[in-house]
Image 1 (cartoon, rainbow, N blue to C red):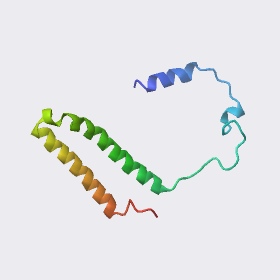
Image 2: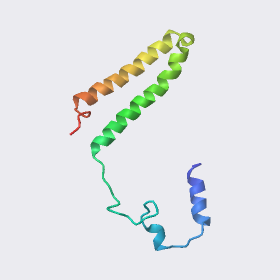
Image 3: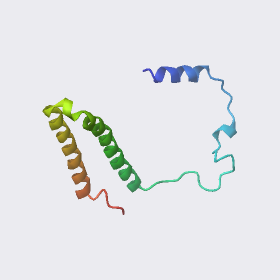
Length: 102
């Protein structure tokens, strides 16, 4: 709701001056030199998702590694479960051959 209200208000009070130039494709101030719609292979998305997952893992592992002595055994078990779930996901992706470039 906090994101929608400012968008609605700004769309209601903004000046409305339609112009065909506003809808034109912008490419570094120059005329476009080719097709403006480029499709990426699905393989890029799979690798990006795997990267994001393991990047988030690093974000969670770093604070734990800094303070693991103060957290105790319960936090150690939780972190092992977290890493085990990520390893299970990686093995699943590996077996489905999602990480093989086609």
